[in-house]
Picture 1 (cartoon, rainbow, N blue to C red):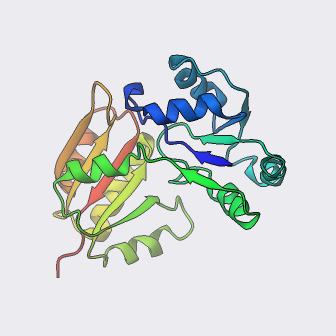
Picture 2: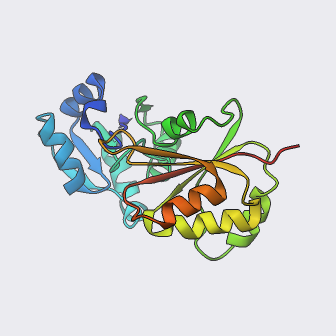
Length: 222
């Protein structure tokens, strides 16, 4: 059996009792970054064998892992933060497990875009999650498409590319489009900056930007 286990996005206290119990019971823990996961595991006194599973090796090791699952091993998949599969590795392994009739169970838990969406104050009854924008190829085509999106849009971004992305949003969506940039969610210095794209761009232009970033942007008005 394979368990998909969400990990805290910042505050270690956000881990669930059930997640701890499952990680203590499995034969092997698959981790996107074993060093990052060890911090969490040591905090909860979880001592189990670890194996790396990330975007650079998932194509090579997925078949072998499924073979071990078919032989009776129980595994849990952790990523560095949030729910595996949401802009993180998991899809290939889950798909292959399903194809081979290996039971898969995903625990409920932390995902950064949910608190960011709720915190934004923008309509959340209907939204689309787009993850990370294309870096180069297809970026303009993607932004032209998103400019016509009527639902609230949610994106992930790195602090290094935040200003470029906000600038692109201004160019394609208009500077008055409302947005919210959330960073350091669940941590001591959590920040949710709301306003027009122009206001938010100017705010972050005047200060260093750190932490994981979620951008929520209002959809096009009818």
